[in-house]
Amino acid sequence: MHVPDGFINAPVSAVAGVVAAGAVAVSLRGARRELGGERTAPLAGLVAAFIFAVQMLNFPVAAGTSGHLLGGALAAILVGPFTGVLCIAVVLLMQGILFADGGLTALGVNITVMGVVTTLVAYALFRGLTGVLPRTRRSTTAAAFVAALVSVPAAAAAFTLIYAVGGTTDVPLGKVLTAMVGVHVLIGIGEAAITALTVGAVLAVRPDLVHGARGLAAPLKLRVHGELVDVPAPAAAPAAPRSTRKVWATGLAAALLLAGFVSFYASASPDGLEKVAADKGIDEKTQEHGAADSPLADYGVKDVDDARLSGGLAGVIGVGATVVVGSGVFWAVRRRSTPQAPVTRTTESV
Amino acid sequence: MGAGHAHKLYRHGHSPVHALPPHCKLAAVLCFVLVVVSTPREAVWAFALYAVLLAAVAAVARIPAGFLLKRLLIEVPFVAFALLMPFVVPGEQTELLGVSVSVPGLWGAWNVLAKGTLGVAASVILASTTELRSLLLGLQRLRMPPLLVQIASFMIRYGDVITDELRRMSIARRSRGFEASGVRHWGVLAKTAGALFIRSYERGERVHLAMVSRGYTGAMPVIDEMTASRTQWAYAGALPLTALAVCLLGWTV
Image (tube, rainbow over all chains, first blue to last red; front, side, top):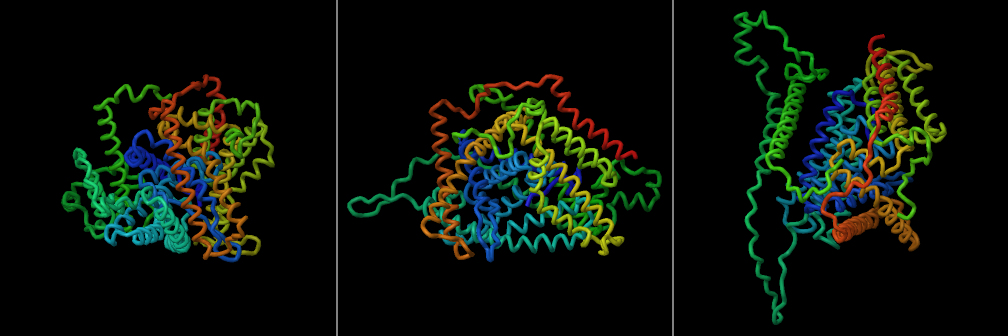
């Protein structure tokens, strides 16, 4: 279900738009790695067309009702997380512009919830599970099931979070959360079954196409004089520069964890300087900061009453914003310092 | 693919709205929706004025009212949600048609209904007056990354092909006596989806090879440069600017 205009207020929609744009920018670079350079556009385009078509495939449930696939988890497992986010984002964009399905101002919210959260949660779970389970096809299918099962209610929870910060009507949060997650657990069961069955069907025919099952490929063997012999390994490729992605991911996860959950238990008394200032009466003349009225003032989220939840939310939002801005600056600086080779861009975009 | 790439919402025409450059229209619709969303919901008359504005644009674009109204049906799921609001939101209660409903809930429902409907109507007008290809060119002109525009254009171009493939598979299943009626048939349908994925992916590989053999290097050549004159921008800007004036009035009154 796509969020229409007027459901989330303008500032939060704008922030979600920035988050979505950042995610799409990161995915554009990641997808090039996943699909391989210039192959990106046609392959990602066709996968997006597949997602678009498969959302029309009706799965009968019982007595005339039927559901359809959402496709976030499926895309992440079949083609990888970056391409997955990209394809879902493109599908949502086209649905918004061409079919008026989902509001234009809510596009950021839709992409963040249905594209980014679903895909990332599904892929992280899938990777974690395939790392733990034995490396067989059956465990890949099982991991796909669990990943899809969790990803749908996770998206519902993410939507509730956005609604808590920027919803235009004060529906009691507990009710929204219960209703959204409850309904979406049911939807998630269907999504999980279909995703697992589909991944299994692709694995049976073209296991090499399944991004999430790349580790399953058995080494090539040759039959020499009636005996199976391992093919000698090709000359080792020059060692790729060590990826810093793991470090980044761990750091980000730790920051979010600290900001979001540990701050629940942080001391409620002001920090040292503030306390001293209060004791000594220094702060009598200090004026409220210019941003005191901002939605995140005093490390709490406006309109969220629970102090701990509010602090945690503000923390997560703060870390997110910092990372987005930081990466933006970093990216801009890096782009400037390494000018593109002129040959690769013969036609400048207009 | 032989039938051209017009999508279902597009209505061929030669009205002034059809003739505007696509990036002007895209920017105008986006600004209009933004203005609508940031209008206070208490200013009921403002939304009526917005509706009149959109009706005027539809009239200039010669879109029949019936067509527009039929397309608005897409938001039915959210209407259901909005109608629930007056019953679940706590707050001051009032009597409406003999049923006790809450006042903040009514405001919330009105907010979602009014803004959602206006947003959908604006998008429908945009989609029914702009061809697919020019929409994509417009997006590119508005500085969407070229790679993203390429992916979107491939998706649009092959969306019908892949959907048709799905339809042919369904015809093949039915002509062999298969009828999906419950959960136990999900296996067959999922195999269909799997086969469709493999066919789509392989088609992508073939398309890529065909393009490489014609000199593709990762960027699409821009053949027809689109420009908009100042007058065209002014025409396109009329809608969001009038809306902005209404919105400001809504905040002050």
